[in-house]
Length: 220
Image 1 (cartoon, rainbow, N blue to C red):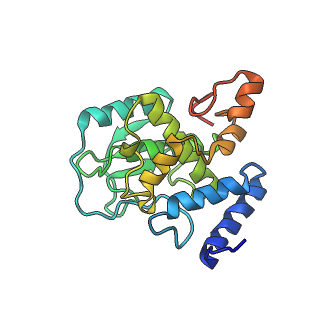
Image 2 (image 1 turned 90 degrees about the horizontal axis):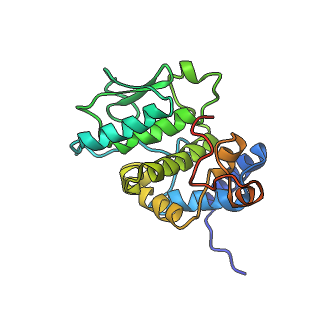
Image 3 (image 1 turned 60 degrees about the vertical axis):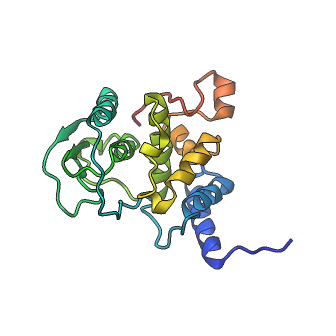
């Protein structure tokens, strides 16, 4: 069989496969799926973090009712959200993590869905360090878990996946991630399973636990 994959693709597949073996959780095929999802529109060229802050200067007007709906959910699971000053050079416009919670500037928040993505990072953080968290981890496995968490959260809230997986993030691959998750082609779920937060189809069938995208619990 002829193989037409580039050296760059093999590099990322190998890299994510090594991550898979390191954690003993994520399959090689899942690592490959993750690479293909985020690389469909250009691909990662410098490794993690896989979420890339919006580069557009056309900041959209924040839908206050949507924002409050997202905040209500985030706070209901135990993550604090408050309005406050955010540095101009914050990774995501108008949004940062402080003391294990989210601080945002409503006048500069580019995408309300970024609140949910950042909450996902906080949620999958080691609970021993979560209360003092000031910067989310760039660990690839935690990034995949945060993305899977975000999808489960948006399903629980019942909002359009495009609100979270917009194409100004995820290296332009947000819509591809949303499409594939919508088709049941997940990544990151084994990490959530390891954290005791979710169950894949096999575990759900054997234990009677709720199957992802339903969550067993929202915080690690």
